[in-house]
Length: 108
Image (cartoon, rainbow, N blue to C red; front, side, top):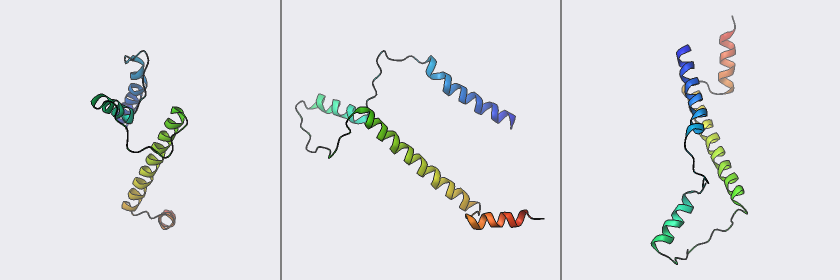
């Protein structure tokens, strides 16, 4: 158990310290895959006009990033919820009935 904790703490320290020693660009760009694809399309076929425009565009890049991060958070929550439900179901714990059964079994 102690060895496992050391491994986890070592990995956490590496995750924290690794960005401090990595070389960074002078001016980092935080573009997404859409921006890169647009660049490639412009390079391959200059003057290309898209045949479809989005219905709504976020007012700024920060809002766009916020919405993207929100989507990622909701997706992570859903994945965690699903995995937790599957784990509880596999263990035979089905919510309130499982809690009542555990309480009944714990009584002397």
